[in-house]
Length: 250
Image 1 (cartoon, rainbow, N blue to C red):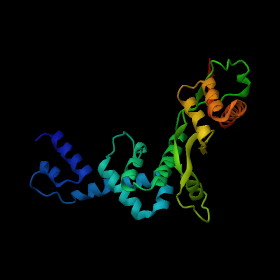
Image 2 (cartoon, helix red, strand yellow):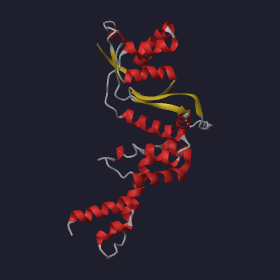
Image 3 (spheres, rainbow, N blue to C red):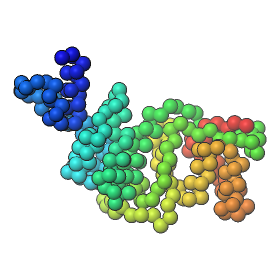
């Protein structure tokens, strides 16, 4: 038997725990073989605990470990570093806790904050650079650290309370009107913000086509001409101050 076959069989057994995978080792029992599998699983559970500390606090060690083991069985590591392990943990949470979207969004917040922190650098655009912009043709360039998703719960309030060791943590609740969650890095700090439906519509256009004029048109349709134009200007100023806009192309 070739070494590659032994290695493949050992990998399959390590990641699945299936007794069928040990056939490649022959009939001879391997004393202490389970030590490798225990170490493998323990390290991955620890990796998930480090990546999702507030989720761990929220659901408790027992529930977290059950979700972690389900994830390890379904999603063996595929990256060259454990830093990437857990990127799809939200998918496992959806399967394990299908009726708790607040947990799905809480996990997304934690992973996105970590991703934003190590995203490529980009200098925020100074306001002085806006004087020469042709706003009819302008396209906004946003920071590569920006992360965005639909918000259906108060998961951001839950995360903030857990992160700040608040005396009381709110229960997970559905929002009356869905909005959006936005994460990005400003300087050396990752930021989290919840957007209402109007601001979310504008940001989606900025993320997609990037045309500032189209963003203004959308807000005018939603809010009326005067309020829409004013809101577009206020959003642009806010995104500049927050470091979300890093360039404007004509």
